[in-house]
Length: 271
Image 1 (tube, helix red, strand yellow):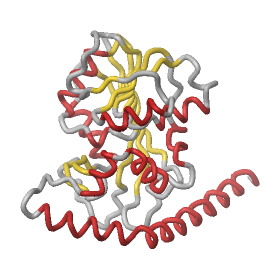
Image 2 (image 1 turned 60 degrees about the vertical axis):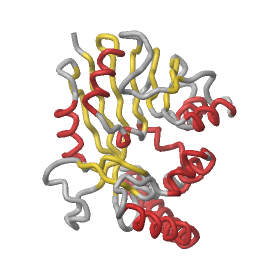
Image 3 (image 1 turned 45 degrees about the horizontal axis):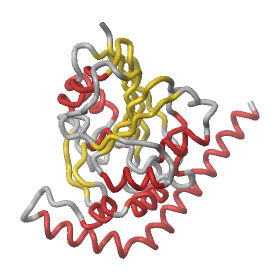
Image 4 (image 1 turned 180 degrees about the horizontal axis):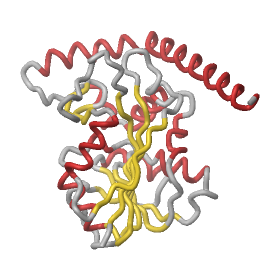
């Protein structure tokens, strides 16, 4: 009883710290945010697919991306991966970025000692940054919709907080089906908006694509829309094993304007 109560108190304190930190970071970074937002709103009037200057800078200079992840996942940036199931065998990491998951796995090597990562991303700058910091030895510079690798060559394909960037999901799932061994798994860890009745985001018709001034062109979804999207896009050989919601305590989930939660889904390739 005391342990349960202590955990509740601890989590309440953590939430308070995170929300206070959000206010501090927002005050410090608001000039950058609003200047970027002003340019973004002006430019998207003529070009709805305009990528904001802030997003372009993060793509060009990966250190800025890492700083953004530090803020968004404060207080423990790489702890967002702690809810992943154990991994083993040959794992294709889609959207590996600068290798933050690799960094986390190295620090928790007992849990991931039998993993052989194949790291893939569209952004060459991020790949070179991660390799320079010895987070991975090699990489594949490719799109998940067209991967230059052999059929049935992976035990697991993982999307660690990059699934919302995948534009063509049916093509992606078709390629994943080709790359996975029988009984191989797809693991998706991503964030979903909490549908709290404020109608900031309308998911009555399911997930939808949007252009974000701080994240580029992305999918937006709540948990229900996420499941609908999986069912609509996956191949017949892929079965959904589980979809869980685990809300970790960080700035992304406990900001004041857009409350979010972590979604983790597991799909399996059947014969």
